[in-house]
Length: 618
Image 1: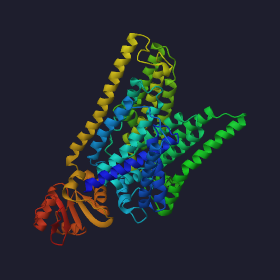
Image 2: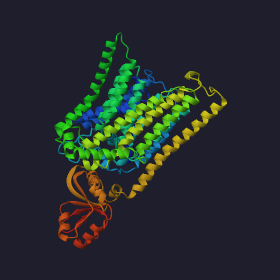
Image 3: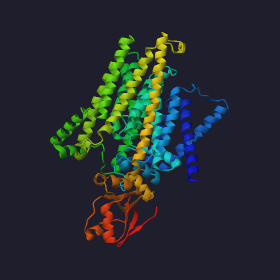
Image 4: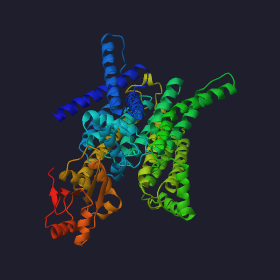
């Protein structure tokens, strides 16, 4: 019965998404942007409902509105009142649909493993889903209260109709990623050219190589930030001659980015710079003064709308919470500097430089790959095909972005991260993957555009299978297209197989083993729970504690790996808790239970009594 309801809920959600997408098509939104724009509009509506403490009502209202839009579009289409022009199916559509579906099925059966899923990203979705409101000061289960809720709201909307579990959360985020990825095909001048479209498909597949530290089977937003920034930049290019649509696009995408994570500010600045450049290039006026005033007016007006949701969030955080981890606060930065001092700053800086110039670093390898790839492409196109191009200029811009991001990341380590985490550059490769992925997409889109400019026939309407300079160039093009298509499919399958392998490899991990001994709790509580974990590192880093908090929906779970050999201390320690969960066999704990309680304990979920542990069947 539950499966039937989840399938019906999924259909309801999909019809809603189609409703928003088709309505945006009628409003002349570019077809490659209707899906992701529809998702962002829903996020903004859900955000407004959540801030008004009406999240449950909002989820049903926003989704039902989409279904009504779908129904209205269907009726009007049947009556012949409206029609949407369809280009037909292209090669990249087949690639996206087939491999995206396979990836989604793999994610549907994937567990959550990464630490930050349980410290925030999965926990906030569970909280929103089962409480129906944003966390307040009393909801201490949420530690990172300053983190904006954009992705969590969309995922919550999806799991409301499809059922809450790890797989559905991952599928929801993947829908957002895949919808944003689809926008890059809007840059194609000629969508019938298989080589160009497959190069972009290959770019999507390659981008997951640099996301390998967390992969797609996690709810972390590092890749999300990159692909949404890419979509925002593509939209500026597509809408550059449509001022109103351009302003609406920038406001919607930049505003959503700011509601995903505080660090998205850096990427919004990139969007703002490109938007300002586009306004300067396209705005015409009778005098220079009028042109300047028009540009400034459009720019300030657009970003005034952009920052309003984020300002609302910051006000909410400061009113609701006295302090929060990783919050944007001048006093917090001053305190951090005073605590670590110049010596700490220099130590972090030295470690940072060492990591940057470490050739085994994946982000450094990505930086080198992009530079070498664009340099070779520039030389080949210029000297072999005799076509001057701007790839060197693009490379310079990408390197500047990387340099500025290095400074931004160093500032984060110094100013807003505890010294113990900062000195080890905690999460460095994960954070750097965002900028590598962003630069990869930008570089490849410009390369594909430049390749199109080198074709023998530049009039797209005149192009046909016979429009080649010679039989050799035709054969070379066909061979190149086949090879790129082959690698695009293979590399995407590599990501799919890699995720499957990771899932199988993690079958003995703590989160998976926890599901074998206990059912998850879905009602927020403050029960004290001890999770016995023989892996000391998982206890010291609070991994097991965060996992138990998420799984049992409590703010009082603790992990422990070492147990006293004293009967008095052993029993006193257990009496602090109401429940004990043993996902993995722990020799010291089992030995203590045998010796002091005369019970044989291997794994399981137990209620604590003064003289025994009572096993609770799953």
